[in-house]
Length: 149
Image (cartoon, rainbow, N blue to C red; front, side):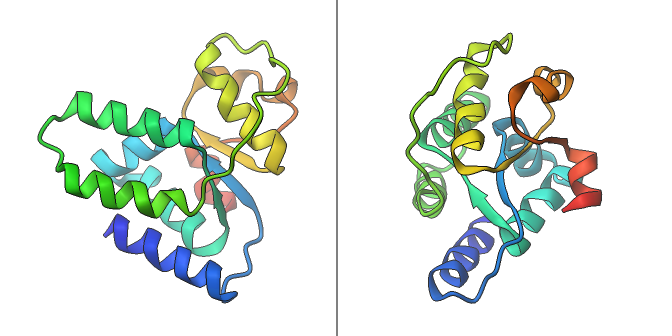
């Protein structure tokens, strides 16, 4: 179902049938939660892909795939390959930019992507949520995104 939604969004974007209101970066923790547990995280991903413009990077896709492979070696390589090909359509190459001083250096590429593309970040990461005013981008929790997007 996720793969189909990604493919439909990509096709709509390419043919001009989609007029997104916001550019949105979905942090890896939201992807993982949505894929494995559903709930609000899945709802956010679906809303972003159907109503807005999903923005991602090779860094986010690699981090997601590494986590899924580590968590569940039973995840089909074929399924991951299809998911990766679908997500490639939304990838933006970014310069890492100036460090933002966030505690976890692994979060720097996500902030750089959002800054460069003027996108909102949706995350469950407390580092982002606690320092949202210092990052120079809008950061929403999953529960905020469910209400606002």
